Length: 243
Image (cartoon, rainbow, N blue to C red; front, side, top):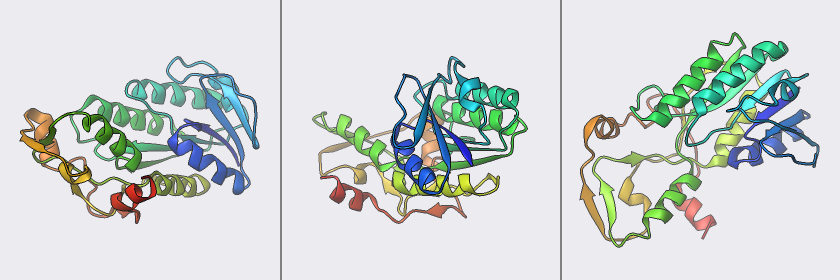
C-alpha cells in the first residue's frame, strides 16, 4: 500500500506514520516546507490550501490519510485534495479525520469540516470518515490559556468528552488498512465532563451560553451519540502522564 499522509508532521501524523511503516506501507508525507527523507518517510513539499505540489504528492499513491487541519481553510483543503485525487486517477481509498458535530454545530470550523467531508465523498473516490472528539492535548492547551485569568469563566451547559490522540491514531490506521467504510461510528473519550471539571481547582464564574451556539452546546450536539466508540484513556490519566 502506497499511502500519502496529509498533516503527517502534526499530532496525529506523528503517531500514525510509524504505525503505517510498521504495517509495511510505503509512506509519503505532504509538508508545507522542504524536509529531507528520514526514517523511511518520503516528504513532498506542497500546500493543500494553495493547491500546490499535489500532483507530485499523489503520483503512484493508492491510499490517502487526510489528517491536515487548521483554524481556517479545511473546506478549501478538502476541495483541493478531492480535485487532485480525481486528476491523479490512482487513489482507491481516502480516509479523513473530522470532528463530532460537523453536521450539527453552527460554528464555522465545524461547517468547514463538514464541507471537507462532502468534497471527498463527492469526488467518486471510495472514502472513510472518522469523527473524533477534542483531543486531551487540545483541551490542555485551552485550559492553560484560560488559567492565566484570575477567575475562570464556566459556560453553563458546556461539556466535552476528550479523547486520547493515541487512540484516534490507532483507529485511523486500522481504517486506512481496511476497506472503505463511509462514515464510521464517532470516537470519543470514556467520560463526559462539564467544562469546569476539566480544569484544576480554581475560582469559576458561571456565564450563560447565548444564541444558536449556546443552544447547540446545551443540547450536546458536540457530543457523541448512541453507537459511538469509546476510548479508554481518561482525562485524569492523561494529566497524570503529563505532569
